[in-house]
Amino acid sequence: MALALSACTTTPARTSPPEAVAAGQADPVVRNHRPPVSYDGLMVRRRVVIAIHATPGSALPALRRQLDLAATRRHMTLSTISAGVLDPATLERLAPDLVVALPADATVADAGMLIDPALDHGRRLADEIREFTVVSVLVHDLRFTVDADDPAALSRAVAREGILADALGTYSTTFSTHQLQIAYTGPLLSDFLIESVRRGIARPAVITPQTITVSPRSTTGIGVDMASEPAPPATATQATTGHNHSPEPPTATQPSRP
Image (cartoon, rainbow, N blue to C red; front, side, top):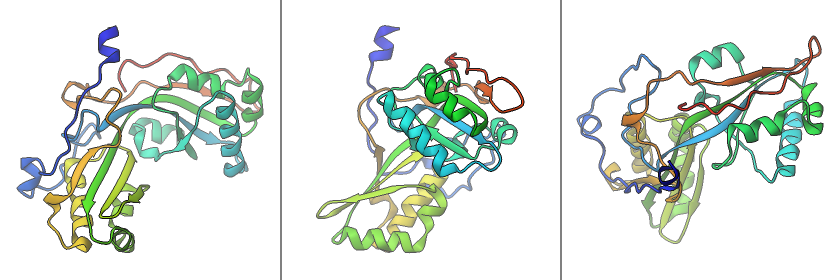
């Protein structure tokens, strides 16, 4: 087990789409709500997230600041992530107003300590939170790389088209002298959708989608072999706080698989 946990898998960058996508097949409907993913290995990671249903009337920006302050005290940085990382059952039950991701090396227990209403910072959060769920999820952690004579102009052109915003939601761009990089961390993307993103970048760049490389955002750590993943739904730990009952700390049990 120690060897397995300390292992670092290597995922090569891809410049060619899977055969089914290259053949022009439509994005399939998946009964278990998990898209077919062959861009895996270090391109797929496990992340612990906290999904929050706020107390009616709560100011979400103020709640987020309190969460960030509590995280800073524990030497962590939180990042906002799409609610789409949650399984459909959790989304329907909780209807979260805010979902934040902990750092890559954080555990469910870390999240519990962060938001535990028995602790000082947790008591300050309790009045603002009606219900929350702590869960380990799978996310895509991707980098799209394209060579360009004017990367800044290409970045603006891609943003104007809006295709990446529609497909990815939130993403970030960086560029060097002759290269544009688009980074994404969020819900798993189907192979079909990844190829749509490549086409959305290629069109304003006036190049073929196959020249756009898809690779992991980070080449360190532990990736996920999607062929070995059991079907969802995930097992979440959940807790409810509010004025009508005594708040309970979250159960710090790490689900074996998201």
